[in-house]
Length: 210
Image (cartoon, rainbow, N blue to C red):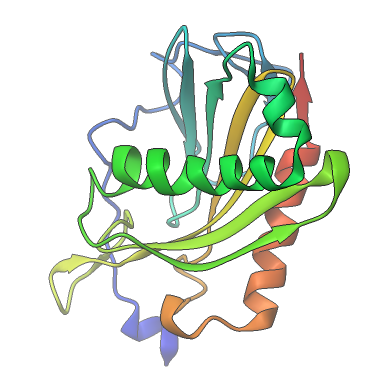
C-alpha cells in the first residue's frame, strides 16, 4: 500500500514552538495578528497546531505546523516609500513579485536551510488588484517527516503566492505534500497546481489587511 511506503516519524524543527507560548504576534478569536499589526489571518485547523514567528520593523514571518506534515506560512516585508509608482507599472510589478521569491526568499529563507532548493513551476495569476505570482518550490529534505527506510527527511514541495497589499509585499506558503498525499515536483499535474492555487487563494482571502 502507498501509505505503508510513507513510513515516518514526527520531528520538530528547532524554531518551532509548542502552542503559542513564545510568539511575538497575538492569537485571539481563532486568528493570528502580526506583531506589526499589518495583517491578521484565520488559524488553520491542523491537528497539534504549532506556531512560530519572528519579525523586526522591516517585516517578518509566521509559520503554522501540524502533526501530519502540514505547513502554512506568511512572509511579509515592508515596501520602500517610493514603491507605489513601480507597482503601478505592470511589467515592473511582475518583476518585483518574481524577484521577491528569486532574489530574497529562495537565498535567504529556503536555500539557507536546504541547498538545492529549486523553483519547479511559476506563473502569474489574475489582473489588477488581484494580480499575484504563483510558484512551486522543491526544498530537498525540507519536510518535517522522515522516511525511515532512507533515514532522511522527505522533500518539501510548497506552493507560494506573492502579492502586495497596503505597503507590504507578502508571500503565502502551503505545503503540497503530507502523510496523506505524495507530490513529485518533477512531474506536477494540472490538478495538483489548481489545488495548490485554490488553497493559497483561500488563505489570502482569510487575511485581514490593516
